[in-house]
Length: 161
Image (cartoon, rainbow, N blue to C red; front, side, top):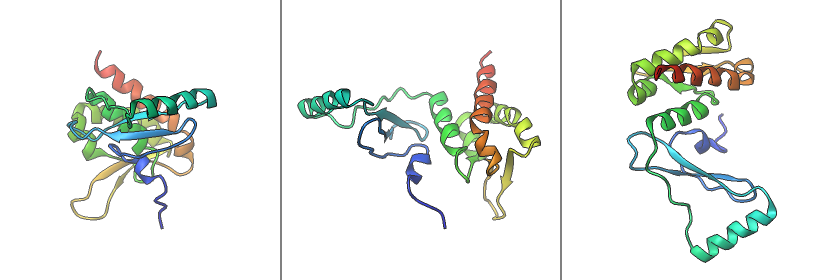
């Protein structure tokens, strides 16, 4: 079977609460036109964490107010950073509906070398009406995930030029 521990962390638009030094939580932005979360981290040192907790008690504001100024680029970046680090990969139909065919083509261009070197592949599900996804191979693709994702961000960055 598949482990469900931390599964919500890898879903775009997830909400979860993490506690302790340096822990990162997320709050779903429900009024955004695409699935996205506002992430927030706890301080990493004990003295800063103690100050943080004192401020929470004083102001009684938790979780921090999420920004509604999440851009398409923010949502796509979250989707790339999380989905490509899972066995299920990045659903290509979601990219197309979220960002459009130009962004989808850029992602496919950026991963062409990785796909030629068996670090990534397009998975077509056998079920009718199911969606294709871009996946990283296990283990080599996952070991190179930072490089592959950086290539995608570089290619997406060229779209605006």
